[in-house]
Length: 461
Image (cartoon, rainbow, N blue to C red; front, side, top):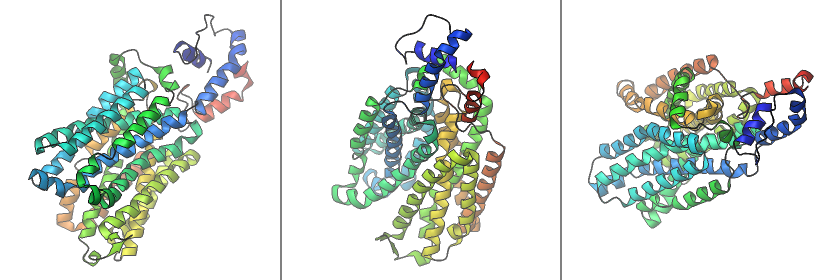
């Protein structure tokens, strides 16, 4: 603990660097209370931490909104550029493929130069490219813009998650992790609502422009938020050192890559084809949900469940641990499976899909805190985001695989069999995996370890 105060002082977090050594017993005792105060203030949230957390969460909402706009505008884009559906889907594939590269690039910048400036640069970058996507005169220009957008989409999560988790009070990481990850279904929800409200009134291209206002809000929030004390303490002097540290932790990186690949298969495997599955149900024709077509209304309902699930399970993880909270959420997914895949009425489908997405995003809601707590201190800007986005890339064959299963066994059995296998795999991955809930981003110790040391008089004297 005593080394923390010296590193904070010398890194500039406190104005003046002391010249005397802190290794002596008497000096250590004199500065013990000061050390504890600095560490405690960091772990309970620095002044202005809410601005940092809000910037991280809002940016992920905007990121998701800008991505799903294309999903909802496939028909309109086909008509404008005179191309087939496969061409628009290909633009989405390129976006996803560029995400790991963006995570690597912007994450390295965040570890070298701090969280604030790269976060602001990233949101300005992907928002500008989104606007240019809406103004693209030809398909090839649009394709190039979506490829470039993928860099920003991949870069933002890693910076935003590390900035939010490092800035937040330690005991609130779980619920804020849920809010962070809940931003993704919330962005989807906002895009779906925008298609029913903004697009009909102002034109579909407006959907590419409306996020600019949110961008400006994020820039202001990040500008007034404090820089991460954890980054100041563990900052790395060069990009070479950053990538060297990454190679030194390939073991935990490999485990988390397996985890992220599997949990992305769960997320995209239960979301992406489900609206198309709903269209294949003959009794669904002509039914309205929330005043909309059922294929729009049901996704709105289950995305609300996804947001609530992410927050609830995130908070639960603060009490029972990250791994057990995720496993409990996966249990909800298994219970929801029969109604989700084989429901024979609107009520069954609504309840099943609501519970399924509550469990799926509940499990995912723990991920920002879990990855950041397991990440090496020196590369927390790069490590979580890169492993997250690389997992997304490795899971990209999930949709073609599910489509192949559908052609052989039908939609219900294709969805059910694939996702059951994924859930069982995730239960094993989390059961045998590591956890560092409550780890201090300053000292590297967990909450229970710190409490034990503070209760031992020998560690104070």
